[in-house]
Image (cartoon, rainbow, N blue to C red):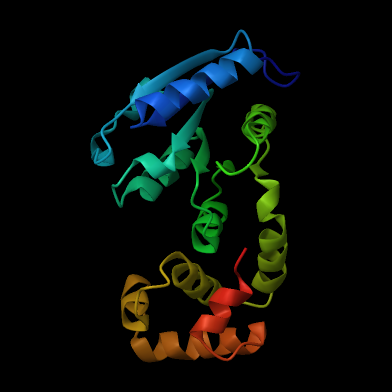
Length: 212
């Protein structure tokens, strides 16, 4: 795995709790990117990511995070921490909810690939990350284009409200307000303005507006 911009070997780490799926993914990458240093890191499905030792990861590593195999609510925060540590990370998941995609984009997570897509998408993602870029699965293109256009009309707080609504559609507005350290009334005002800008009338229509 060498690029014009990076002379050292790229280390690829598959982080999963599913041994069978992880080994299948590892074999596929080894077959298509011979010479790469690829390792499989198996953790329990309820692993406490607060205990993870970041010192063992090379800054040149690309971590492929099998999002579906972990039940821990802190999984997304862990991925954000990997990014903060300067480690390029790919979310590899069957989950393609607009909220999760937007949160990944918001926190500058390097890559997001759907397991429903061709395995070649994962290879493309690795290649782009090796060159220092970002790669989001092409099936997300229309959603990201819509979001980018819509974000220009929103304040930072309004964007955060949208992210929380789309990430946790079953949460009440009171819970979303508490998550963002807002009063319920302030959250209602922001949500009303968001409805107006999206040209929708209610919560359900907003979710439909941003559906894939």
